[in-house]
Image (cartoon, rainbow, N blue to C red; front, side):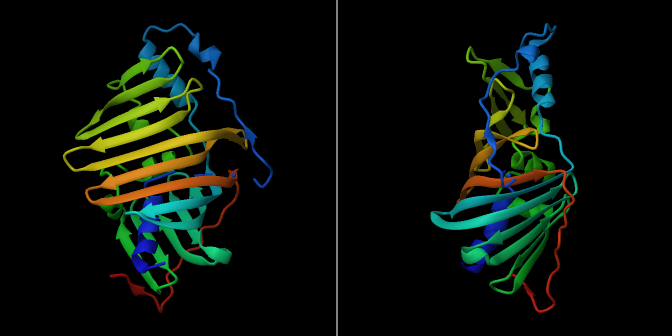
Length: 265
């Protein structure tokens, strides 16, 4: 892999979503929660948003491994992402290539992004805003966490959103935040099927599609995630398939920049 591919790969991680136990997960048949759907309410739209919030995945820590195909401007790479999250504080990711050799490692916090490129012996140490090279400016640290576990982004579940429910039970939530137009597709089980952002003026878009929902440690999460991000003339596509996840385990987040490494250009 070339240097720029490795560096982009870590940034791509910041605009998407992830998960897995070695035991096989039970595939979840997505059904409506009739107890919530049939509950009388004065404001159906707000009641729907409240129901969606109640189905969000809650956790203190998360770890997962995902086989991933990443495509940057038409050039593809197959890697494995090993991910650890401490909710609200840090996201750690190790990227391995063929034969399980680690080629890069990253540590993402609400304030910063650090990346080690072991192949080239260089590192990146940037503020979190560095992610805006490849993602919308409305993306923040908690946005990344939400996408990684299949949650709806909290800022989009607000009283100003337009809420429409189809006969199938699927719900569409749409609206705008400043110059960003958003659209959420929520299943009858109140889990997120698709998240879309677009800023036409800035030529930015991001779409995350969740599929093949499974049960992991008592939580329902997507086992397959498809991401398509475009910022002006830069594009990133990612196809993730998760084969291991654990919640609320004691985790370590080892990260240090070797003294011999130099800043990346």
